[in-house]
Image (cartoon, rainbow, N blue to C red; front, side, top):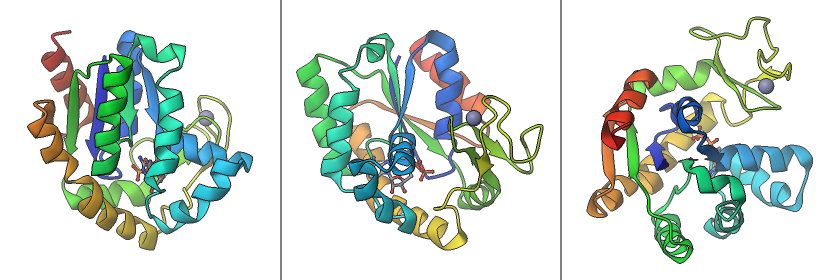
Length: 213
Ligand code: ADP
Ligand code: ZN
């Protein structure tokens, strides 16, 4: 399957993407994970992105498009892909459209994960992430078996640097201003699937129904 996952921070894009990869081997492409890995490794990309991320701001479109142009050409994408956290702005969406046309790829849908703001705030403050493999936990509803240790890879499970209350509120504002307009962009493209995303299982069911799988 070839999907874009849209939705506010904490809407569950990463969780849904991981559930979908298990269905048909499509790869999850998370620009957030790619950027965090670059920051951790101290690469040139990481150095350029770090300050924006820490403040809860978007990384400039040119940097993101540079990453995605390369990523979408890789072999594992032939099987299908789930774009998690990209596109995030109208210019990114427009450039993605051109890029896909160039590569001869058609999207199945752009899925909007719709979740009330109170739920989002609660999820983000209790969310924890594995530094090494990106696995997502929640200290209330889905803690790792051993506190602070990833069940899947043994990596360290931490609160992200941009998950302080201040950065979260900034990220939600940035989402409203820059990313929410993508919902009507994809509606006009005839690709939008709007789903109530309070439960990730329901989102996966709605996507399967839409794709007829
Ligand atoms: P979330 O969806 O929970 O906000 P992500 O892991 O997708 O978090 O992204 C973390 C940060 O990485 C963002 O706040 C932003 O700084 C940067 N980022 C990720 N994807 C993009 C993108 N497509 N465009 C610009 N910045 C991005
Ligand atoms: Zn891990």
